[in-house]
Length: 429
Image (cartoon, rainbow, N blue to C red; front, top):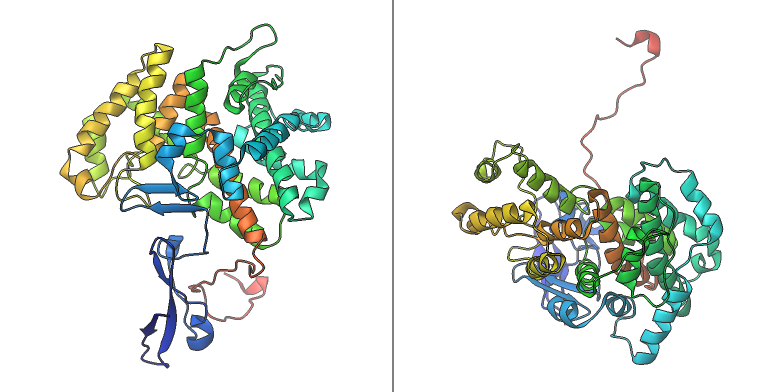
């Protein structure tokens, strides 16, 4: 085993083992660093810190590679569907015909919410954010399936996964209906997963929403492209909650809350809002580019660059082609698309962006596609959460099933006051 040596002026040197992954990624195992030397590492934002070993998703940001369980995202987006990808992520292998049929049947059988759960919606204000309702309702689900919170057996995981994946779609649609004051619409067993999501959102008792095949396939691909993405903020949150022994429902609820942030699941909404400002004349395309290059400006060009990718985001390339098809099918024109293309064209030919590898990311086109389908901006992160759910489940299980797991507990470098005495209130200035 290869080691590295860290030298200290005020303590003994220490040899630390090098860990290598199956794709030749290398890391230094610092497990014994503090106990042997008294030092810890400081890495704000964890940009250089590996929090775990995982066999779920491989991401190479320098080469623009993304693979689920070893299978390239391009192949899955072209040949697979969301439910098969969910099964792949959770179980580790593409399902056989028998397993695929069994899992699909479980999804169909568990699509309906317990009738008592519907009363929870009545407690929310009509204008509640759908992500707030989604997080709360997923946590509430654990009350209706207590046996699934007490065990980590694989057969129980399959049932819990089916309940969550099927019912998160129902909760999402009901949340949307709540904000519009419209009656809830129930799923149709013969519909596909994405078809039912659109049906429950857009159908009315007196008007059935006909889902175009190309549109349901587009939604399916969006969900596939968001299904997992290694150790991002929300996935790391799920794993941290799982490390405490918390049940799957609680961990997923926490992941939804983490995803809600505008720098994570809300980023595609921010892209659309930026494009709308340009369209309304409040911003100028060339001015946006200049402000993005100005280090003294607080302006951020949303949808460009990525924390991990230093090359094209492979998901963005797929979505760019998907956007063209969606607008062709819907026979729609959207001025935001032309603005987006103009921004992309300028940025990709500007030395500032080229030298810094600031390419369009997955958020750049996903919001435009959802907007074209009719999904409102506040539902964008909900679609993201539905897509990311299988990855969260897989990561929760990876932690829960590891007998060597221990509760996550980062250290810190304290920068506050040193010891000082308590001052009685009458003596305080």
